[in-house]
Structures are given as C-alpha cells and as structure tokens.
Image (tube, rainbow, N blue to C red; front, side, top):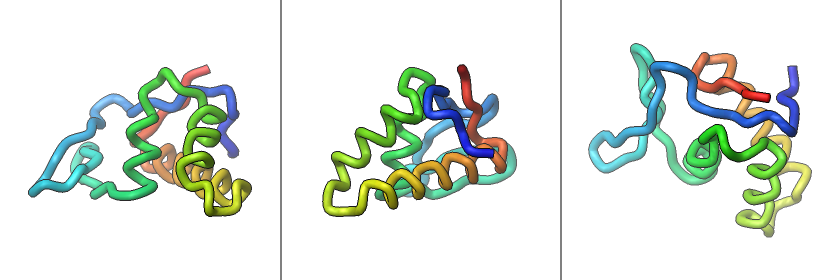
Length: 92
C-alpha cells in the first residue's frame, strides 16, 4: 500500500515525540525510536496538518542536492514503515 499524497500523516494514539539523553525520540507503546536527520525532519512534519505531497515537496527543497525522485521514494518508504509499526496514521 502506497500512502495517498493528499492524506495527512499524524502520530498514532499512544505515540509522541520526546527526548532521551538529549536525543529526539519517537515514543511508542513498549518501544522508542531515536530520530535524527531526515527521519526527524519527516516525523516533525507528521502533525496532521501537512499532506504527504507537502512534506515531500518541503524535504525535496531541504535536500536539494539529492535526486528528487529518490527523496520522494525514501519519504514514502519511511512513512509506510512507521504506519506498519503502528506509529503513524493517515487522515484523508
């Protein structure tokens, strides 16, 4: 399943951003995922206000030296991974 570009990703119930020993982490039930670089940039934008298309466009500008299609594929793959781990939901 590929996320719809017009959907708005947001953290799933029970998940939130936090800090652990100075590092940003995604806190999920019974686990935590340390975030940095692109992963942090992606999760910070998953606030339910931005569409996937907006997140992709924003990060393509931020990582302008990278191939735009590769940036898009990486973002979509990461969003899908977080969704599969029940850390992220997509709203229409």
